[in-house]
Length: 258
Length: 382
Ligand SMILES: Nc1ncnc2c1ncn2[C@@H]1O[C@H](COP(=O)(O)OP(=O)(O)OP(=O)(O)O)[C@@H](O)[C@H]1O
Ligand SMILES: [Mg+2]
Image (cartoon, rainbow over all chains, first blue to last red; front, side):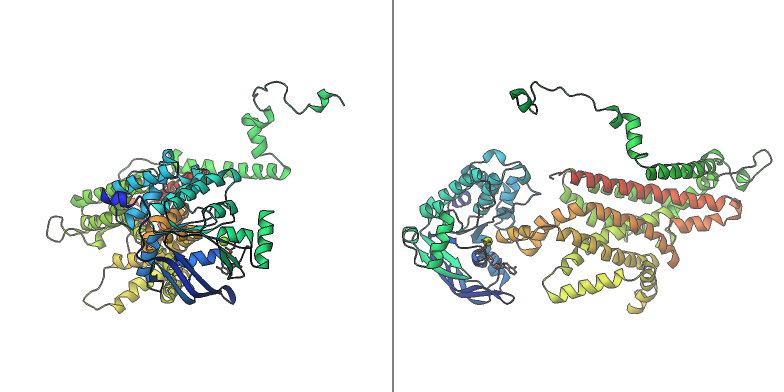
């Protein structure tokens, strides 16, 4: 029972710094996609990353759980450096939840099975406890009645909320979101942002790639602006929107805010 | 323009459903649409109808109408003045059916073969039933329990119990089914491993898989069988000379594994990258991700192709008679030369029997593949 309750709130970090990227560089072939990235995310901080298409936002957050490999520099997640050791990488992935633009739910499993799979097979929870946790998070994202359905039977917004719940069931310390609302119809964006908002209120450390500026303004501690593989600007939302420093930021903001 | 004409495309009252026009419904509509839709189709229909009229009646006459169903020896199937046309000599098949099914398996032990057939049929039924309960147990049964139990059952238990029956005594349908079943039971897991190996990020594993798959696929099965039966003993110590059937089984299993690997690889390729990424992102190890996420999806869409491979393998098993193994075809070959049944129609009957056996088996398998395909196309979610 103890175990279940500990799964219902963000797991505590071991260190103050949740994610630290030091001089990170990455190439796709000859293409220099991340250029000397330095970023420090404190525990409980909520970062929104934005920037034009192809600027390397997805690549950056996917490096944090090693879906992409960086070639130079260091990345530390909760004090543990990401190196080639597969076991270490799997450990880090356990503690870092990820939500994808395309949901990526497992279509052959029910919603409940999607949620309990990793807790059972990775965290080795008994099935009963895993289901208890899963139902709790389904309740949190407001779709408790969909537990027995298959992902294909849900709307996009519902699927994305299941994806968020799936990540939370692993009791992560850090959550990564890669454009969680861009594949959704406009009327479903809000339900997903609401779920993320609630998560932010719980004190979860979050890195969110998003162009939802309303969400950024409301939730982010810092907004990071990327262009051509570089972090051009990082600032509080107030400062970022009120007085963008860089020409490209201004251009981007004028395009995105109309 | 009046308001009424402007709104002509809006239904003014509820429109009841009516039956379709006659040209598109019923027998005539079907005939017109499917057989006589164009001059070319009309010609094709006529040619096919003539072919059917030419072949089917004489086939039916030989197989059924003029066939001899009972009799104790060749006298029953010889032409006589009062019975000048003799069709298939089914009396021969009935007389020899036990030989065709069991080969030289000792008569008092043949119940073991029957139990094996029943256990296999049970496993196949469970495995092929898409909504079956406890498919995980089914997999263990089919790929681990069944092979071991079948081996002990058919070959004999070491500590006494069931007496030993050497594989040289096995024959007929038993051997055909054993070769096909072993081929499938071994080649599926092996094929999955090879397919994964071919997509592996480890160069050595990938190279080995590619070489194995391409080499085996580039060689005819007969060559593989000859190599297995002639070359395998050269590599092994004299004291451990594997028996003839086992050598052929190894050859068939390796051969079909290479084909299965390509079938499975096609299925793996159809699974989106996002599934791999989501599996990794929740911390699943490679093997767990494969077992829990990727393979269930990949194999499911691959079932029709796996079954088609199995159909091919089932027919290919007849080739083992070249290395001296008594499969069904070989038993018929042996029986048809028996002077007791020497008639002009004995050979034809024997081959017709084999053809019908293979046709029914393979047709059942491909129907199943079609059924699965239809189920998958329906967007079945399980
Ligand atoms: N696997 C890959 N191989 C080669 N190039 C890649 C690969 N993945 C991404 N790229 C390139 O790297 C650049 C950055 O990609 P990334 O997906 O990080 O951009 P992004 O900022 O997330 O863009 P978007 O807003 O469109 O999602 C793009 O130019 C893209 O074409
Ligand atoms: Mg992206």
